[in-house]
Image (cartoon, rainbow, N blue to C red; front, side, top):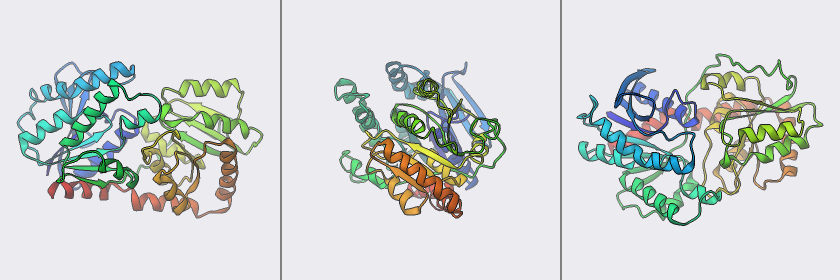
Length: 396
């Protein structure tokens, strides 16, 4: 199939979404499809730039900047983004290509116009991969009220859904939301698991053995540290466990709360906490090989559900997880049912402390736990099955 994959993140960006899309692209190509990834680029001088990246054809289209800026400016930039992409696509060598299918990835919710243009021009179906139900989660978090901005974003969200022939959500708990979304009878919603390709251990610039956490059972968090994660409780947890010289916490990444968390750990003089800046995705397996458990954090105010990409990376590395997440999340059943960690949903430091102590004992006693984590990763989160599911839906 000749497929267009449209998103607003892709390497060299280091976000979990960019890595997911890289892995999806490689698998689509491996299974014999002719793929072009289309992404916005604010840092190119020409209207378009066509390149090969790891064997994947990537068309970068000039568009407004949308990252690392205020919410208001980002919203304006994202609203204009698909129209700029569409205009510059028409100037590119791929302007007249006919596609057999269009796949696109949310977040962001603003890509509907360029997807609709490609669909109509080629008479082809589209598949929306939705990993983030926005703006609902922003309302849950108190970042957005239900006034005019919310109604505008809901209209954009509804248009995005109207363009999709098939919508792939990441957990069964998301399905009821779409039963109320006003979809047409011919549109389908299905569960599309997250995915992660195998990544070899090629080393890491961070050395746990040469730092203050050497010799401890290390709980690692690698990824975005922002409002949606609600990570303040983890600093409280580290303070509660400061007397345990055998337990340490390692935080690696960036985000709106990263500086605040680092300063708070320093203010409390927590010798069991270490922070590092973001590292390249290729270094993550080497980082996890030095650790013993992964941390998953979601603010409890979330009412929509997701399985964070970092959970997949922990499972692939054989790391059990300590999860502080919102009640009702499908991740609870996975972690408990597969016996790959411990889950807290009450946002209680007391509960988290008990779970950490229990998990440390289990890590030392249960030698089969890493194998269970890796088996779960291979069974549920392999990109091969995801690509077959998407392309079967497009063919249907």
